Length: 392
Image 1: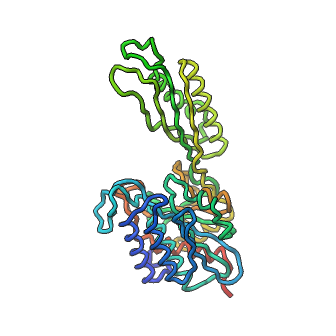
Image 2: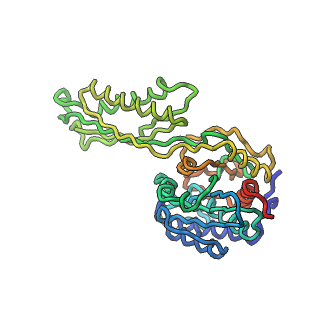
């Protein structure tokens, strides 16, 4: 049975992780505005004696620890909060109205800082570790921006690794899988243009409201009738905007929504089917339907060798029975995927749950579980020890 005292993380580092985490939680900053958070991270890394690079994706921070010649790996944490109001009452609750660390990025940052401090003190390896603190994970693709601005040119790495807290998984456990971990995320905007008319005389116009209703129903057949039962896809219309008053049929209606898939081929087929259905419904009703389909985050795809290394590192801390290697892919998305498109690597979930009533991520009462900070830092340390040769 795992106990948080089973890690090698020193007590002073544990205390600093809690302080970092709660300070960042109290001062949440959203995508590409993480200036204070980046300052906290950069100052902490500089005090460890590490060279610090700033400016990738605006507020990104990267520090490098080199101990002789050897392989090079990158460890990544995310910095940003969400645009939502915190309802919890902890002393470290958000002091910024309408912003909240509701996904645990404050904890991810603190765990990677703790690992950096431990590794800087002990240097149990030969090679290089890059500590990557990425802005803008929530919706804005900060990982893509860092890659486009030369992350792996400036900081060459043979592999890259990420981690996320899972409140639905009990503390002391890890979960991951080889292959696709998270969904491909796309969004769409559809504009239906009919012909406005008096509500009492619909025959004189083309009712864009009726067309929208038909289209919403037709789009659902992509999953129910065009996608195999063993293939995963979600098509959700999440917004409908149209009309201004009671007795006028509007000229236009706007639909917005999201598509999630677990396979690039299913992603392609879903987009093609949406375009085909829009054209067909428009022709049937005599309306014009334009669709703007936007590819978002790709799926997080763990590579086999790096997944095996992550499993071994986690098992060295909690035992093989507590590392679930067959977790179901999540329909949520994660922009760490952009880094995995450039380098092999693995993304792992760390259990943060204490009971059935724990708030999930993106919930206004969520708060990162500080009890997992030592284990998260210890995982990073164990991974470095397994992926880089021991110091001579």
